[in-house]
Image 1 (cartoon, one colour):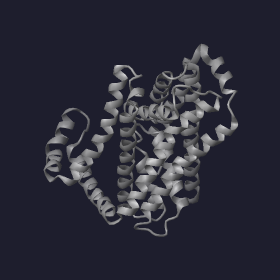
Image 2 (spheres, rainbow, N blue to C red):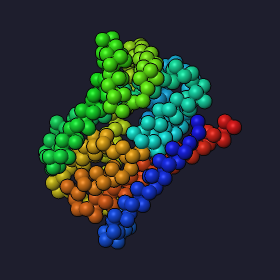
Image 3 (tube, rainbow, N blue to C red):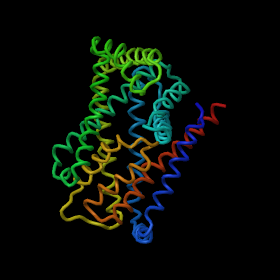
Length: 337
């Protein structure tokens, strides 16, 4: 597994966008730095712990799934895999490089490619399911928070939710419906080619066939280990909820309290941000995520607090995690020489 030129270019894009964000702050820079200096370190410690815990939980779930076919697989290996995946998720558009990196790491850790593919597809499905479950709860229990957004943003949030849902529906249909599978292989792919979304129909037909085979293996794992899958799904719902809770802790770290807004309302805004990130195509959602965060959280506080919250939240939950993932990745490279 090599960091090719496209990864380096994407990393350069991330740095450039971060620099642009600081430039845009302009006149608010002094007010933001002043607020950042008031941070309570006890809260920062908790924020860091929860951000790390999110990826540790990913590692634990990977381990639990891997042990179905490889009982000797360790939690430490799973955690390493999770952080390395976070690094590659962060430097590739649409998080497209994370699973490829995970597959390579699994192979280096002694798991064959067939089992690795099954684990990763099942893990992806469970992660999507957790996003949909938590997103559904916030959409329909915190409709008042959604109403704070303008009509365009509300529409995009709902579209983002259904985009995640459609991914699961598509996976289900392409595996469970031979009729849909045949249509997609012989007509759907040609349509995507006409829209210039894909280049080669033949290559993608093979990829879809390989995917169906891998997903069949993952489905068999699911059916034969329902108890384990149920536990992993619960962990994924928990980790997504914890991640949505972090911005509330960041705001509290500045000594700010709310009278009319609860921590559940802040979590709902975080969930809506997660749905909007579907439309942020740059590596790691860089640029779009930051701007959307400020827009959303300015609805319940002022722009200075929203921007300061974004900086600390994004640094701890994204850039710090990417750095740790990069260190784990380089460590693996040295060990495997």
